[in-house]
Length: 312
Length: 221
Image (cartoon, rainbow over all chains, first blue to last red; front, side, top):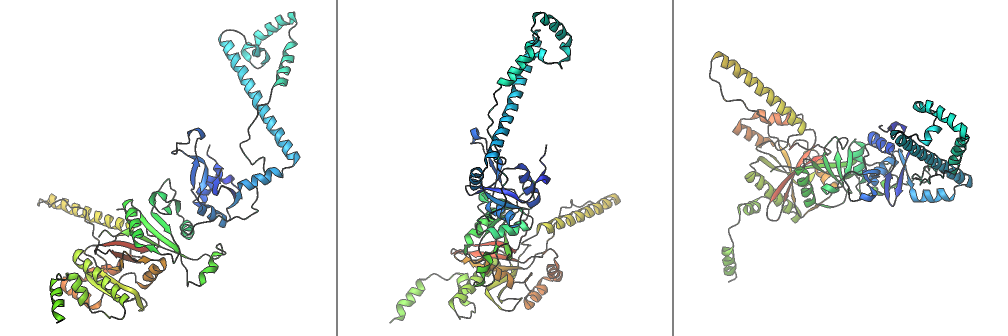
């Protein structure tokens, strides 16, 4: 069944674990991808096969830029996961704790009952296949095929006064069942989903203005490590399109080597893309300082240049 | 007495290369060494474009055609022998029109065959893209650039380089391609400013890269 991304309530939490921005919920991942062009990178692998890195799954790691864009636009907020767990479990009340333990016990008991029931059914099946009658079949009034046999059996057994044993043994087996110990694999619950209390803004590199510009134009981005740039930029979903640009972001007055431009342009041309350099446009050199403080409200225009080999 | 040794040294020097004598003989305003260095670089690029890539109508601009302010460095405009850049969307249109022309030719040929005349060779897909004037930005590999300086260059250039009045008349008189120049000016696909980045290394190798203002999708090369 396909997860339904419409169930996601905004703003959704992004977990920050050891400086990484992670999403653990498939619905949220789909929602971010569909609605906000945020792809991220799947980093989850099989614990006992950690060498395999072809089919990676959840969690989804977001680039700091992606997390920042989502937070700035009010779609998400950052949760410091270690802090949230520490606070959450220390300040958990006794009632909450007990009710959670009780709930886990009930869950474990259900699991045990299910296991026992399945084991009995299986042994019955085997006995029946061998032409013998299973002990469990007597306990099962719904098995239509053995109804007549049961009746004659009971008639026999009543002679030996064994009929009252059955319910007693059933009760005894229910009583002596030990609950399976369930290892909890989620933190929410038991913790309540933390709210956006801290307003953390992810720290972003200086290429962020270019990222934000490309994102605002509807482009999808993936990390550009494979092409020696900051972002490889796709005109649509990365599963449907080839990328158009290899983008490198820099400051307006940052000096760059022409050799880098030529190298980037040459590589991009080789893989049928264009090399893109860009940055936040700044007026005079004195007036830049204010722009950084409230980056959300005061967005300077971004200027970018596409570079392709001329073929001369 | 002093004259004689220098004369012998001069006679021992190799004959200057055509490029060197071209730079030496060019009329420059020797107001500062940096401007003359950039000017000689422009001359070197012009020389390369003219003799290695067969560009024509080459012209060195020292003032912006947009604002008439002096340019940060001399820029070159020129006409390549064939189209240097075709936008992918334009390319699709060109191929489509070429295909229509080919089909029309094939149809005409079939009609001719029906009347019993000799059939010509099979028509091939003939994509016609008229060459366009380009801006060229001469640079040296040892230079460092910033986005601000690049933006200054792009702000100073026009979408299409202005055709120098005298030269274009000459060209038209020589080649008689008046329609060619008109086509260049009216190309509806040329919507973003572009500058050819010419980078010269110390061994006088020159590489050319096309820079465009903004996000322009790559060609399907």
